[in-house]
Image (cartoon, rainbow, N blue to C red; front, side):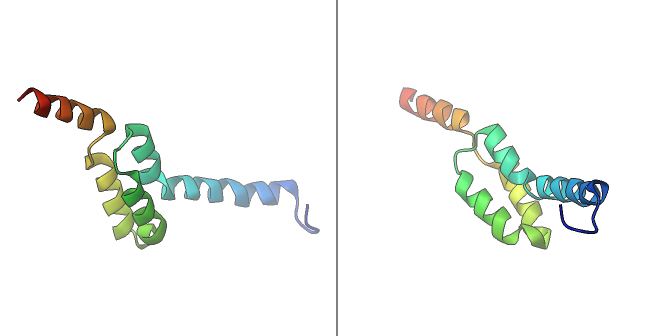
Length: 82
């Protein structure tokens, strides 16, 4: 532990930092939880433009609106039947 800092000081800094990182990567978490087909676009947008807030909001909207892998399979099966 660095000199002059107590364990409580480090804890006070570490917890908000971890919460902030978790909040920053919510769009990426959503993409993986929903099993979205095109993860790379959301990940890159969030990584490079998420700090602009507008980029973060766009990444979050994309994460919820992109087609999931299950939807893609169902659509392919439906298209085959026609």
